[in-house]
Length: 175
Image (cartoon, rainbow, N blue to C red):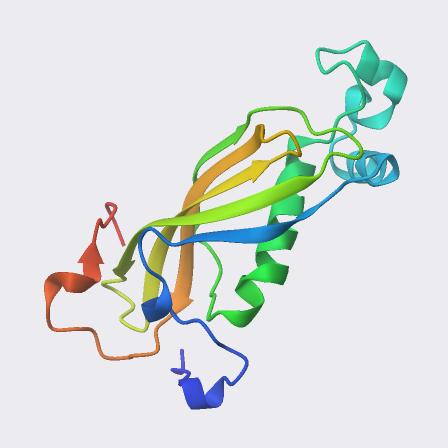
């Protein structure tokens, strides 16, 4: 992979070095409509309680509810629009935890919060840093509807690995 420098990527405002443990970001909000919930479910999760109000009322959800995968997709949209598009993001190697803690209904106003919990330089890729984050999505009542923990990879501004061990902060196994 060819290294990218800040001069070569003027759209990038946030590099791995700019991300700090403990940073919390409010990444905006959105509100799914009945039509959006049904359209997503029709294509990707066609369970009855995601497709009709009647089936939703007869389910444990008590009404039409969004697929958990739809909730994840909405969180991803907020993450990209309000954060990742201005970073040196290189994608994600995966999630450690995913929980849908409350149903999402049409008209709910969903707000996404992102917290950085760990970061370290990757040992096999000195031009890439790894960041562990917690994503929490809340509805208009303050109820948590989504909890995700996982990793993101970000290009480093400084291509030479630091000589101190300071870059290996709260490092998870592997790398």
